[in-house]
Image 1 (cartoon, one colour):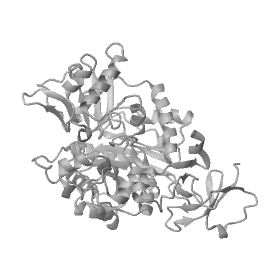
Image 2 (cartoon, rainbow, N blue to C red; image 1 turned 120 degrees about the horizontal axis):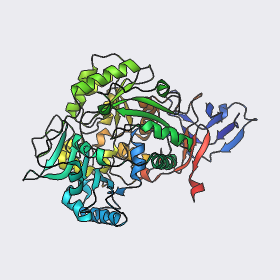
Image 3 (cartoon, helix red, strand yellow; image 1 turned 90 degrees about the vertical axis):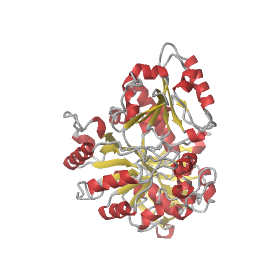
Image 4 (cartoon, rainbow, N blue to C red; image 1 turned 180 degrees about the vertical axis):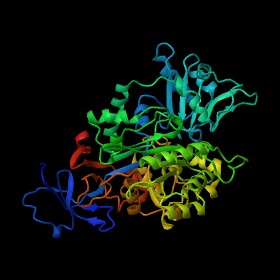
Amino acid sequence: MSERKAYLNGKIFTSDPEAFHADAMIVEDGRIQWVGREEDIPSVADCTKVDLGGRRVLPGFVDAHMHPVMLADFSTQISALPPAVNSIAELTAAVAEFRSRQDGEQWIQGWGYDEGKFAEKRSPNRYDLDAGSPDAPVSILRTCGHIRCVNSRALEIAGITKDTPDPEGGEIERDEHGEPTGVLKENARNLITPFIPEDDFNSKVKNLTALGELLASQGIVAVADMGAIEKVDNYRFFAEAKKKGFRQEVAVYYFWEYYYDDPEFQIPAERLDRNRQIFVAGLKLIGDGSVSGRTAWMNEPYLGTNECGISVCTDEQIKTAIDYCKAHGLQLSVHAMGGKAIDRVLDFIYPEASWTPEDVPYVRIEHVTEPSESAVRKAAEKKVTFVTQPIFMYAEIESYLKNLGEERMRKCYPVRDMLDAGVHLSISTDAPATSWAVPSDPFPNIKSAVTRKAYDGTDCGRDQGIDVETAIRLYTKEAAAAAGFRETGQLKKGFKANFIILSDDIMTADPDEIDQIRVDETYIRGEKVYSRHDQN
């Protein structure tokens, strides 16, 4: 039996609608035994007393949409983000430096580029990457994860020429002569994937275990892994990382495009148990692309064009995904940023009744950049969960202004309107598909949801801002509900003792300085797994 502890003299925000505020709690056996006002506390004679010193305590953060395995792997690749890389010239130099440390023709990989942040204000192309590595293949993923830029050697290895047709749901960008530029959009990016060697199993587990430590330092106690961009079973990596000390709970989703026509695909029954630390939550479909890449499938054309984006998945994939989820009690998750993509998902879902347990949303739609009023109303009515990312406009404001214009940009991610309409909503990072130096950091995301200002101060529609308490609820209680994590996200009797102690009081801090707040301590099931002061 674990030690019984009484945490006293704190400013505790519980995310529990029945009692949002407390100043004391009792923890034993990894769970909260009591929480409330200190004057009402039961006898603590048998408790070890911990004086919180008036510090702010929150439930641990739940990132309901990210890609941890990808983020962990990226730690060994070129980061094409500021402050490391600020221009295509610097990206070329980084490729050349990486090449100088290699033997043979090993692949050079990178991630995170955003043409809006480059000094040249354009996307890199094959010739830019050739200048850094004319002989070894290079692949750099855009920040959104939906676009890949490769060099000439990579195109040659994959057999991509001017005669290669665009794959369904994808585009091979071409120059005025019809030659591939090296920019591969949406499903076209997967033409390269089979030729890129995977990290070995042990390396992936090592990287993932290290990522768990970073997440703990950010106060993150649970994550949803929203699928691998290639056909690989991420569950195996988490299961092994758990043995190495990975502490977060994980909800795993499988990309259905890799399995819908595979009659052998079957998820082992034990993986579906949501009471386990690592479990399989559902299937994921990609309905469209990204706003910053002009591939999100919008109701109106992008600024200065007649283009509305790309529809990625087929009707058959949606129908078979629904059937599989219904048969196995799984969630259906669909990436849908643009209005047309969102409406399409809801048209398929609207006739359906929920097929998951009562505490698990049967359908969740990811990102939800520009929903129609009809889509918001239908989602509220059918209890479809929206999982959105305020950090996108905060970090990628240049692309949003260029592709949508100022007025339309301010109407994106209408968080306040969606909440007022009764939509079940949570916020997350989609790390590493975020143009930010430390993409999994919750605090810039919370800041952006509250202030509705971009990193450069641009007004992103302040009428859609929310208060700090609401933002925290969307990052804790509602995020846990979105992925079906049980007994976490709230500081409530019987719930897991997953909580964090902050360096500053986020409730009273200047909203513009929320991103300066740090986590002092993180507890998972009552055990301290991170202390900022121990790192110094």
